[in-house]
Image 1 (cartoon, rainbow, N blue to C red):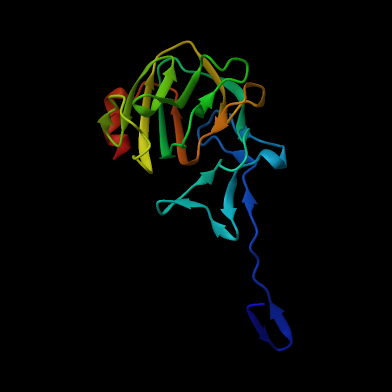
Image 2 (image 1 turned 135 degrees about the horizontal axis):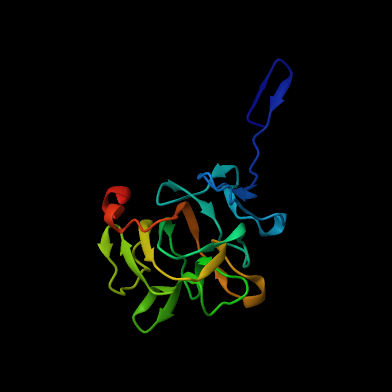
Length: 193
């Protein structure tokens, strides 16, 4: 207990809190949900808000296959995706993906000889903290703002984790994910600021 007054004992609890729905803030109402409690990512860990580098995050780490499914697939044609968070250590860490095909329709990190790198299909222009990403190792970037300018007919249907059938593993955490329904190349630097 943390205090007793007038015969009443107050307790302190160290519990975890989970996210069931990642709400679409646009007028599209295409919310991303995870109804299986065992697969929901944490927002509270041991009674405290989940953080990374001092930033509040939704933590997809700990269990494979944690992800949200969008109510409807998202066509990536002329879209810009903004992701604030920290990419995961390891291979095949997904930010966005498609449950029916792991070889296409994704934004993820991959390991190769140069270290852990962002990989997208379809290809895209990538910016990390405002600078053009030239294929460097993202292991050391820590918490950052990552921007992906896409132009493809590909479709994604999950956010921030994995597709169980494909045995991929989750991205570490995310503070914010914005999927613009238009190409924001001209406005990218103002939005990132």
